[in-house]
Length: 327
Image (cartoon, rainbow, N blue to C red; front, side):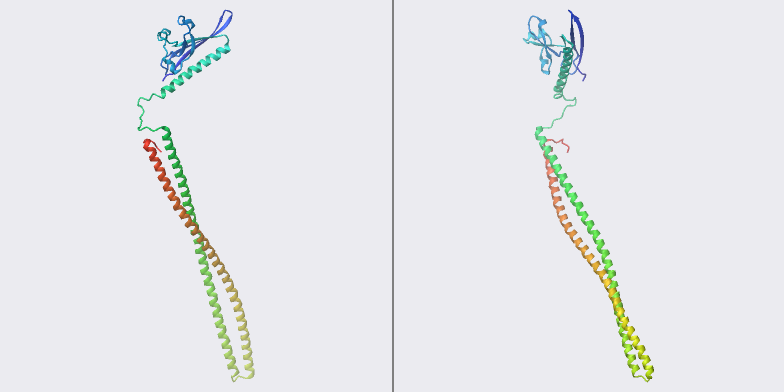
């Protein structure tokens, strides 16, 4: 739509020894207005047009005024319109302010008139209305309620998903601890095998020592009853005494070695067993936390389901009055 056009001629006139500043404004294109007669004049003297005075730039409601003085008088009206107006001022400051104010008021007229038009007119295609019509306030309330339910659903879903992630974290930690338990059990099996081997070796050493002591005693008895000379018996007895001393030393060393080996392995076994017990306790604690986490996930899942139902219900309430609403 073309804009309203006004030609404004401003002149400085020297008359009777003084300057006069004249503004002649003429509307040359009505644009979106009803017509070009945008200047309203007031009739002061019914018989003398020269006494008519400029009243104002027209407002949208002023276009009902007649566009000629005679037509206005014929209808007993004291206001009429025309497409031009002349203004004279004694000083340039007032004149400058006047033409700027005049321009602003013409602009306000066109803007106000366009608002009036756009609030009524549609495009050539027209506007589709859905009935029954619902007041904007009610529709907005329903839409706002739907948005609130959407927000609640988003919050509930976020909380549930976070809890699911937390439960997954517990499961990962349990699996990691179980791996450590399996490794510790493998170590324990090795240590127990070593412990059993050490005990078996010690038992064999004791058996061998006992057999040697018994053989030594038997030889001594045979030596004492043999036909050997005293010198020979004494020599044999001395050797048997030396063997007996060696066997006693062997027993002492075997006991010391066995104690050292058994003690070291037993300490390692105890350490691994304590580690396994601690890991098992940590695993049990995690299972307790996982159980609580699973219960909370179930509860939050119910909250999400309820929030989805509330959101869907709020959406249906909006669609009932606004079928074309798009979430």
